[in-house]
Amino acid sequence: MSTDSPGGANVEGETPVIEETVETDEATFTDDAELERTLGLTGGLAIGIGTMIGAGIFVFPGLAAGEAGPAAAGSFAIGAVVALLVALPTSELATAMPKSGGGYYFISRGLGTLAGTVVGLSLWFGLVFATAFYLVGFGYYAVDTLAEIGVTVGEGLVIPVALLFGAGFTVLNVTGTENAAKLQNGVVALLLSILSVFLLYGSLDAVGLVGAASAPERFMPFGPVPVLTTAALVFTSYLGFAQVATVAGEMEQPGRNLPLAMVGSVVIVGVMYVVTVFVATSAIPSGELADLGETAMVDVGRYYLGGAGALAIVFGGLLATMSSANASVLSTSRAIYAVSRDAILPRWASRINLRYGTPHVALGLAGGPVLVLVATGQVQVLAEVASFLHLVLYGLMCIALIALRRDEPEWYDPDFRTPGYPVVPILGALSSFALILFMQRLSQTIGIAVMLATAGWYFYYARDVTLRGKL
Image 1 (cartoon, one colour):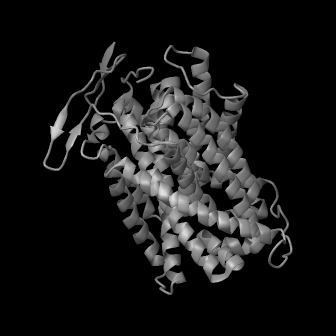
Image 2: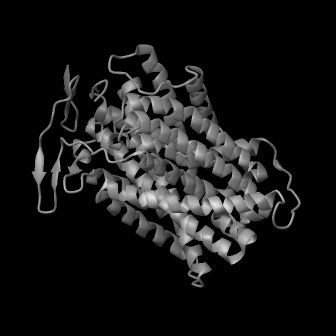
Image 3: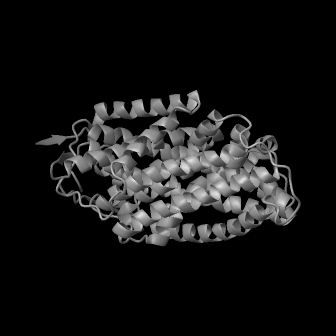
């Protein structure tokens, strides 16, 4: 059976090859081109770690400590466990379908076009919210960096800086995935070096081996429920492992590198998050950290290492939020690219610039909405909406794995199999959906509205699209 989508694409059991090529003075585009496999294991880890480490270590400690006290460390640990329960099934799906688009691709092939449309478009918006959150955090650290060197400009510069760099990261990604990956690798290597030294010294001080002893604060001053609500808030910190899957179509040796990059990045970053909150709450009481807000870690650095520590943290915060934003722009565009290649969005959105080998239209559709959301400056809402949409994605990915294992289509031949099946994907789905219940009402409302809008798009535009099992 063959059907025409409203966008004019003819999509059927065997999607036809479209060989339309358009030449302009600026570049040459094609509708039938593949992204090059230029990312290795280091690049995959850099995307995963670089995306996650920014918000978790440099933006959230003050906000999280204000909500849960020192038990915010437990909130990050809960997030890491949920992320691992999802990362293992995602690794299996990614090695069976190493294509750009990640969760959208897996769910659309496992659960059908409606679920794929809702998730694919929600992934687009979820990554847009996450990228805006990272960029606003970057703006705060840029202002603090200037303050540390004696230039006081005030918080009025936060949003303009975030907008400027958001546009810059979009342009950088247009010029080539390899360029963006080189920036990501360098930033993450330098960032991990700074953090390793700081957290080692801070941990030794916190346990009394160096420095002056401090009176311990009650671990769970607000009770157990805030630990769960804070876990829902900070889960944005763990979006990076799934972003590795969105660039699966550009990974070398995906059967080996995808699982290592996804699981490895969650483990490395999860440990660093827990240690960071322990170090921060050992230095400054939770109430004071909450008052310090998004850049509380600067004062933590000053507590342990004086002016040099504060300067190291503001520089690290710049690097971390920069790497998060850069990786998220890349991943957002790949989600749009995958959806448009299936004609769920107009096919022109998947055009590739042959000069640079990048989906330039998709990058524009990624960067534009990000700049609009950055202008709001609403850090906590941006973070929670991103978490909401990703938790829905993660739960459905676990369900998609169960569906594909049950049906075992001929093309389904993953290089990696989820250990503990089916317990792991079932727990991954349940825990993902459960965290949504602990979010604030506004974030839940916006998330549900986005999903309803994407379902409406399916019935208006994409309901006649039939997807192949594996492209």
